Amino acid sequence: MRVAEYNRIISKQAQVTMDADSDYREYYRDRPRGEFLTRGAALSSQNTTQPGRLAQQDYGRYNTQTRLGRNLSSEKLGQERARNPTILRKKLDVCVYLMSAVAVQMEIEEGANSTVTDILNSLVGEEELALPRTGSEMLSLWMVSPLLEVQLKPHHKPFFIRREWNHFLQRFSSASQDKKACDEPILSLQRNVFVTRREESQIKDPKLLELLYEEAKYNILTGRYPCEISDYIMLGGIQARLELGPYDVSIHTPAFIRQNLQRFLPQHACRQGRGLMNWLPWPSTSKSSTEARLIDQFKAIPNNASPKRLVKKYLEFCWSLPYYGSAFFRGQIETPAKSLSSLVINEDTEILIAINSSGIYVLDPVAVVVLLGLKFDELSWDYAKPSQENNEDCLPCLFLQFCAIENGRRVSKILQVFSRQAVQMDALISGFVEDIKQRAALYSEDNDASMFNDNATDTDDCLIPLTTVSRRGIPESCLSNKLNRLTLATFDDEGHCIGHMGSWSFSN
Image (cartoon, rainbow, N blue to C red; front, side, top):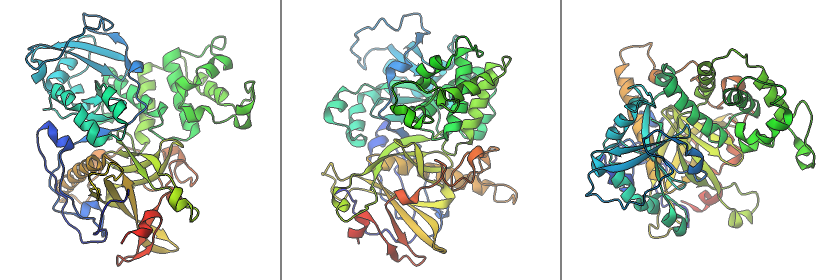
């Protein structure tokens, strides 16, 4: 049984409460259930308490080997010392990985009692990194492994988070016990999920912009940021120019680019453009091939273009993506049944859920497309515990409710997301919504102000269907909502169920 017990799907608005425990154990502590907000959007609830700010990712393709680079400390990173950590040791060796293939090894004076703030201050003070003081606000420490990623709070002590890591995995990861037993997390310096795009767009420091560029590039190349193929090629051309220098026809030949295609494009984009040529044993020489298009973008960049300007150009495009800067969670949804037999044998669809300060986005990580994207003023949500808490196959759920026009009639749709991280998603959404309501209260006396002003950029006016600036209004875009690929329940304005699919058919 996968469907969570949920008898109040259509109910009145109620407050969403949360235990805002300051201890690190809050990451796996139960939180009381709220009720589903059936009418109005998430912002209409006026009694939401301030939740703890939790951002967590579960992305299994992370490879720490690609992040291991030169060492900025006085000791070589390759000299591993077998030390048995103990809370009694005063000093502690800490290695922090950057998104730019750099690892920083430090000796922390406070040892196991060092907080995230202590380590961030040490990193900012590292001469060779040359980060500005604002870096401690724009960036944060994450505890990262192939099974789980968690943004740590300023007061958290990474040593104790690491010591309790297995508890996190047992609660929030669906991996096998063997994988959990072998899991080794690292400390990673990454973008703070609570930094808005407007704040980020005001950054001038080249070192800080470079780190943000490296993280954006990672999310582009791993398919976390769905884009059109032409956009991927445009970004790949910028990356090639930054990493290879000015275009040289004698060096950067089609064969060279073809061999390095996955260095500049995500895997699914590398297969595009050749069509049936993918099955041929010889490479394509067509001008419309992926490598030819990438070369055209590469050589179109002027030789005098500065790396700083190219980095900013790359980021400016990524800022236009509605899900930029999101925390990512793993989950699954029911695959729509196409026949009576498929109701029994259908397997769930694995998905990524991206949440940032603007909204929530359901992504297909295989096809790399947006299945559903909603801003916070367009949705209501609720978290539900599994009906059989001792059954590992019965997962917690996050319900997403939104309005749609169907046959000229306004209806309400509900999507059920199954995930062990549903409680984290619920907490993060609550935190963002509370922040928006607080800003709305501050701007309430100014009729010209918008509650989303703090998050706005020149390209932050994306609504459904989600598109980038260059792809706005194209229905077949990979960024358009694809409700036909979702198993949804449909309700009228009075709360009566007028349509159901999948397991909704067997619920009350």
